[in-house]
Length: 399
Image (cartoon, rainbow, N blue to C red):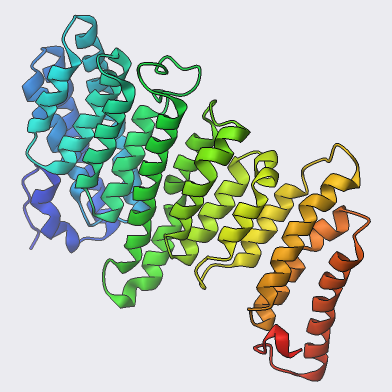
């Protein structure tokens, strides 16, 4: 028998959706969003704000489902946030008419369910920031704190992605309209890092949701969501006020601490590769000892050689100003790090680290004798092992 479901808040049909496939659950969700958006816009045209907020909350309720995977959930998220633009435009018009934004900021918090309430809060928060009725850093800190109310990983990740979307151009960055009384670039850094830290925790937590038999599927879904988490790093790197001096003093240490504290191989690999990619090469050369130190503290599941290879490829892109002197200064700490790590790793991982130096060895010449010897010694050890049939699980110190 076909179940008859009354269209309403998404939570009302969750038990039915659990029995559906993602494709079967997606179509009715998109239809419900379209229907509730129609009623919301009709109420906005008549300036019936409370009615519009009711339909908006019902529409956002479709994001409370647990029946959709990340790709399907993303489609629902895009549909909802696209329709919320109409509500944001209404808030902007109300601000231009002289209505205090703090009044609307409090009004939307009357929504019954936490997820719709927070999406509405972020929608009005975007205009609240724009109005400058309160200091930007105060509003931003409040929004980041409110978002802790959603701890279900998938819902929380997309909620915080919407937070990033709403506040992207409204951070108190150097030279922005929100700097000064609204805060400083240091406040902007703290806000982005706080949001990043919470998103990383939610992302890692996904692997523990559901039965162990579905772990492989969950890991696949986690990989699909990595770009959502990495968006914070792109925003952090695009801040005008994050100069080399600010990056060294305020960004690199807390950022790497957040990544290492994930204690998850997939998260650490992707996020460190993002760090290597989004920030200028000069920032990495200036903070190389710090970065290499944190690489030593990664989870055993993280592929340190892959991260190191990515870092080396970035360092090789730096054209030295004074010939080979600068290049050797970059190479030496990396080679020293590899040598220290090889002393505590098994042969195969240590060889992967040593081989990661190859691009830098080929590009930066002449190599000093020690660096060439370190690299050649590990290649020779690998050749000897393969030729004699020795176990690759022996430690470097045994060879």
